[in-house]
Image 1 (cartoon, one colour):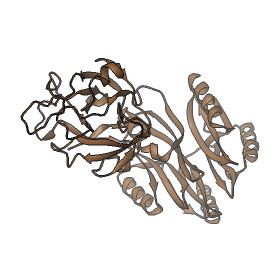
Image 2 (spheres, rainbow, N blue to C red):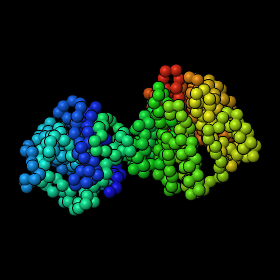
Image 3 (tube, rainbow, N blue to C red):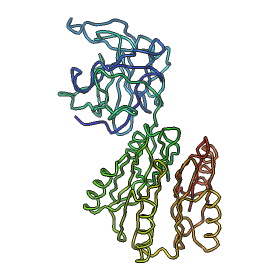
Image 4 (cartoon, one colour):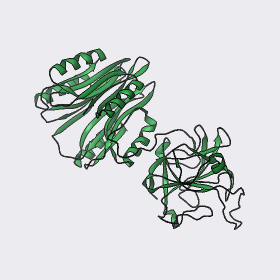
Length: 442
């Protein structure tokens, strides 16, 4: 059985703790999920697992049916159609809770988290719970009226294993309990750019999956930590023709393994990011399968080793593409990517204070060099910026730093509405708050 293309939230009101009594392997028939609320505001409220249009509602029954009696399973249920041809079903809801309390109608569009009705035990249910499933129904006449069961579904061939945001491995497991919460919602296709900043690490994979499902590719990834939590800044744009792959949360050994595997297959690294997760260094990387200049890279170098290698490579005509710095236990580690290409004159500076960055920015602007890379890190409690300028990078641009989250969002909205694209965005700790630096270019 395949996993769903779509990614869903737990279909209960935020804050409700639910327990899985039957997962896609143990439910009979397989491929469906049984769960029930065990903690939270009661009666337990069922919500839409993703954005979509309501296709079927049955809300008139109140009787619990013994499945061994031979009586028809007169369930109350809601079917919602989502992107990618997938539908979700919510069964055993209390009578009138869908049409009278939630006031829903067939054809209505609902957002993820929209109240659908109350958990119940109507129909073939051994007790109060929610029967939840993801399926790909037939094009016409897809379900049985009584019970709302998918037709043409022998061996559960029309069911999909639901991928759930914010839980381990994105898959429900029998006996486990989970807390319902908001997650990144569906991303509509067709935008010139989809950008998120300050996204908690626990929600990043969900956002990534949603973006890829809507035919976007990852163009930029920046990761930082604040108060013990890891956060992502990312930029997606419409999928191009070249194949690509991206990974995050990699140890040094895992990153090297991915690097070797993908470069052997003809991919080239586009960006390598290092960041702190707890007391360890982690790596994120974007690969793309396309022709381009020769490249070389290293990761986890000390400052002196990095400087020596930088001097050796640049003397031989290599130009730095990115230099990511992370500080662990008071020691900086450097990760860099170089290409054998002519970028004109260039300047690369790491570990600048924000004031030093502004001075270097002005100096390079006078020399007709623009920012070609921007990244940040904190070291011993203070923020530092790393930047690369070169004379081949051209175009009308906007550059800002020392922005709060709300100010960055306003700058992003204005810049993108004026036709700019976000080239770089990086987050860093500044005192007790988080600041952002970014560059937009047409």
